[in-house]
Image (cartoon, rainbow, N blue to C red; front, side, top):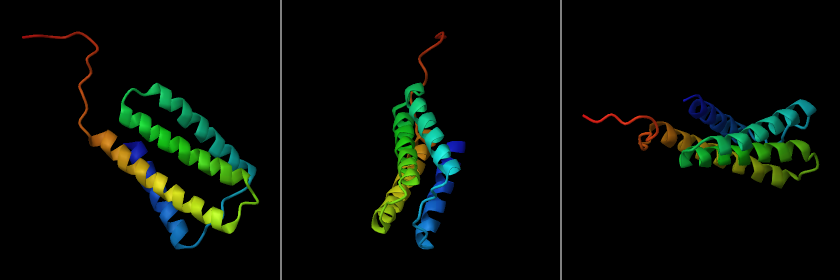
Length: 119
């Protein structure tokens, strides 16, 4: 549930940034380090989950964090490329939010591990 709330929040923040015409990415070392750490964590999470919805969700988050890392490092990106990056970021957050809701509330198979009790 926390992932769903976080994805929805960042979807909103991305929308606000576009609405307010704030297309520039932060280029300080702290933001770059943060993006890189989240990229590594998302990459690690992909292999740790078993549900396909969660794997796709973490793959989307990995792409999002990779995009943020690239634009945080790339100080000479053109205005148009930064704008497209912001729109792509919004799209990724929207997809991640939708998929996290599906993973949270979507029906899945019951776990077949563990002892089976028959009546």
